Amino acid sequence: MKIKETATVFGQSELAPGIFSLLLDTKIVEQAIPGQFISIFSNDGSKLLPRPISICEINREYGILRVVYRVVGAGTEEFSKLKMGDKVEVMGPLGNGFPLEGERAIVVGGGIGVPPMLELAKQLNGSVTAVMGYRNDDLFLTEEFTDMAAELIIATDDGSVGTHGTVVDAMKENDLEADVIYACGPKPMLRAVAEYAAEHDIKCYVSMEERMACGVGACLGCVCQSTEKDDHSHVNNKRVCKDGPVFLSTEVVL
Image 1 (cartoon, rainbow, N blue to C red):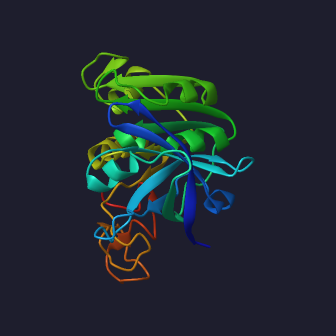
Image 2: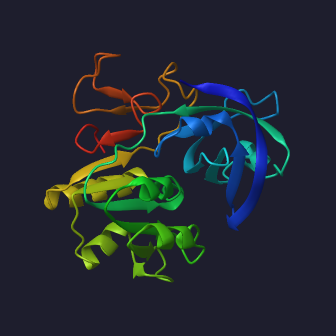
């Protein structure tokens, strides 16, 4: 069940230039699962639409939800000014989240697709290999992945750390095999990861990063093309916010 409430900011820090970690004291933490997201509302009344931000960590013991986001506009710029004790309207948990499967898993994150893979890595049973892609050496969450995963492999666009190239270049370089691959990041990355999974006969789940408006499936602003007709619109569409954001790689056109 979705919760809309006023959350209290428990803390905030900048992990890398323009990348912020926000801790929220919210009841949403009681229901959240890896791969879901929350909507955060601006305190500026002129900005009606909330900003969807994926869940990075779930700490039910202390009632704290962690989100990690990149500042990309006025809304996220406003969020980056929040400090401990401030209040902010939130709604969630939203979306379907990742299923927890397989004895050997690869979790793949690219850019701001890195954060949602952390809670997934924590909750997966069995061996987890994390493959994370960054623009350069402005890395974030690497210490956490080192603690949670059996192995952390890094790829950077400029070659300053790890493999010079994409996450799929790093997967090929390390000849990775697994029972299941989970991925979140830009669509070209998801397409390449899905192709790698198909070539190696590995089940693959992708988390889509389409732009969203309402976040609850009403406005159809975030539809993506599906391989089969859906029950809602009876066309080859999936609502990323409501039907996803997690899909089997074979369910959607990447």
